[in-house]
Amino acid sequence: MSGEWEGWIETSYDGDYEIPEEALHTDNDPDSDYTRMIGNLHITQRWRKINIHFVTYTSASDSVGATILASDGRWPTLSYQYENQPDSDTPKTMSLHHGTTNLELKKDENEDDILEGFYYTGNGRRNHGKMHFKRVD
Image (cartoon, rainbow, N blue to C red; front, side, top):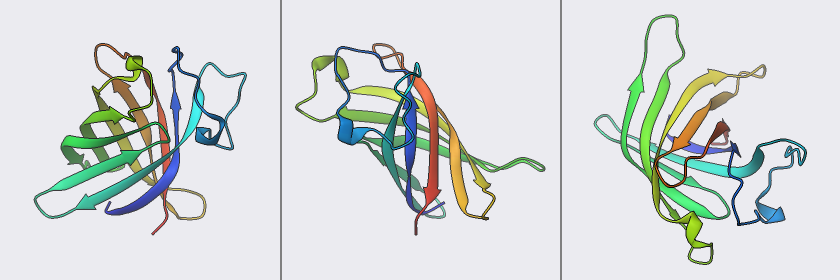
């Protein structure tokens, strides 16, 4: 799973901070209850260690624990817990928080590697959403 991944998150966030236009993904639907934002993953995977670094326009997060699950007949799944640190110029409602992500490794119709799944945040934020990334290297 090592490499660079580009895509989006679709977040339930509906707080006092208006998400800047440049942070929005081109597929964002302003009439949806969810906001689609640009996101990038950098995954470093070794035999005994994996690190996931996730970046959006307003914050960055790093994995604090991760597991790759593989079962017969199912897509391999990357499950990880993270700590998110918002940029210093965001409101305090965007404070440091923890969450969980589950992403399945799949192939799209062009046989490109895709990671897609969901995330949710812990107490204080209580956001959730979908995630979708395509390998770019």
